[in-house]
Length: 142
Image (cartoon, rainbow, N blue to C red; front, side, top):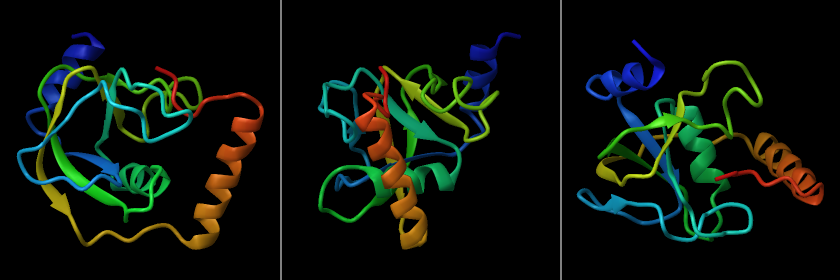
């Protein structure tokens, strides 16, 4: 069984999350084609999802905007693949269980009782992202 088949088989049993600052409701679709919440905010070719709360929390905390971070429970409407921004380039495999898709994500619920990272840890991550930006490295490569 190839890797994409394994991932697609997991769709039936895995819960997925999407961290953002967008205010959405059950039944909404999160689709590519809008400006990204990260980096240079260019038109996104993919939408991102994760099977871990920690990665979703980072998504909610690091998204651009003044709104509070939110974490949605989402269901992919099409095939997904490993997110190359967080996998194999930086660490072997996919320990953060982070994925991307060219198809929409269906919002099926919201996680409201999550706790963010400490202010010190959040500052450390933002400082690191700023260093990468100064070096001309985009956080998200479509």
